[in-house]
Length: 435
Image 1: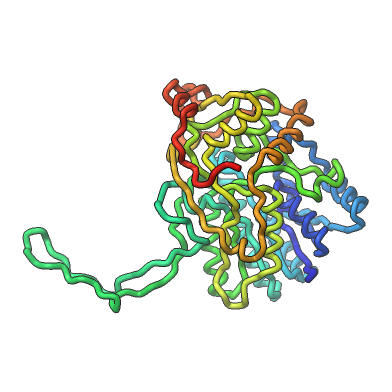
Image 2: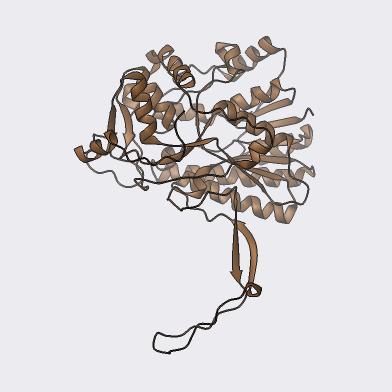
């Protein structure tokens, strides 16, 4: 069924291909953006590897290729509250998709100013959207793009559930004693326990991830108090660049970020391989992460739009990912395909050097998602894009410049030989094989 959808943050890496995909599927799409990501390019003095056209050029190209109209409204969702409310009232959308947040963990850790900006922008945007839905007096379904990073990346020994953790809580205090009391502790029977589900305990790894945890708490309150229908998508690391829609015309090309702040890990490795630059691996590369191809990302969002939670039900949470991989294994794969060696750098992040990760993603699979798994053909496709635009690469922007803790001397230089040995002879730590 066709819906009217407002895509907040529709000029961004995931927002843009999502807007095109939904338009292609017959939905009426309105993009809202303040173009802040383009301004951050200017701040960092690093443009997308692919040339991003002005919004008007993009939308004209889409109309020429498909005959479909996508409208654009320039609004800062975190600041222009009255305009946002009026937009909701005037357009009466069925669904609002919320991408309107600063999305890079490294950028959020760059300085106190960047931490403050990320919190102010992300949290205010989320609060404003929910308040605007209330003030519009409309039954609008909110779909939010969150992150798997809210769960944290420490090995926990269980499969990460989709948002909610089942627990049992004692209903009364057990008898306690000091070691010298010689008294037995009263056991708790099944009748003394209450089963419940709670939000999975968060463990954010950056200020950016922290804002996503705050989003979840805000959603829980507005859902419970104001009965707003909300879907929260905990997305893995996105890789790839183009979708079928962005390939229709070069003016529609999606972003390809390769720098240390905004470049996602697999895209960074593939770009570096394409230009013969040593692959930048942080620490031992033992970090295991969840991944999803950009094509699957937009499909998942369409599925979420088509399957809103019932009125008065709790926040619906999906783990939006298709596979997990260890960064070290990804680097080895890219190196084996291209002959470009890895360069181990001191890890700019404050995180576990090695971790395991297993994730539940049954909900999207049950709703028909057919995962696009990592394969050599898709890797080659991304590298071809990188080669095509290699002349736009600024080599000085590849190494990390944002640090979780005060950087040590040589933080962006090579690791000692011990780490190089680990990288070349890795312990198997990824939970899925690389296909």
